[in-house]
Image 1 (tube, helix red, strand yellow):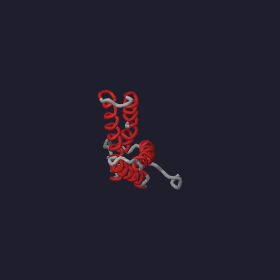
Image 2 (image 1 turned 60 degrees about the vertical axis):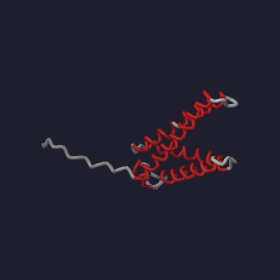
Image 3 (image 1 turned 120 degrees about the vertical axis):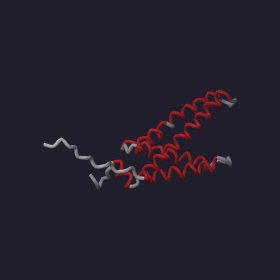
Image 4 (image 1 turned 90 degrees about the horizontal axis):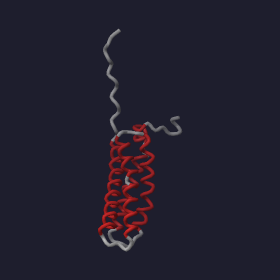
Length: 143
């Protein structure tokens, strides 16, 4: 018996589509952190009409940022569980983008366009067959 170890085959590299989906999810998470921090600081130091509402909104955005950030980390590590939270994040972003697009504020419309583009692009990347294979997700035909 030989004591030599046979090298294990190298794991498949992470597809670029999966990396891009993780990057977009991280971008959304960071945007939520920035928005939450801004609302929280303005609620504490600024003079909003309702400081409690601004503070609670800021805390809510900070907590919501955890979903896309954790999903992005899981996607980067090719964890199958991360696809669900990433898809949920994109589905939640679409009505927000629609609301921003229908607003009358000049800065909110471009933000709505950017959010819609990121959400749709992320969804396309997340349901791609190459992404599914990399995550080990099998469809009904593969079972």
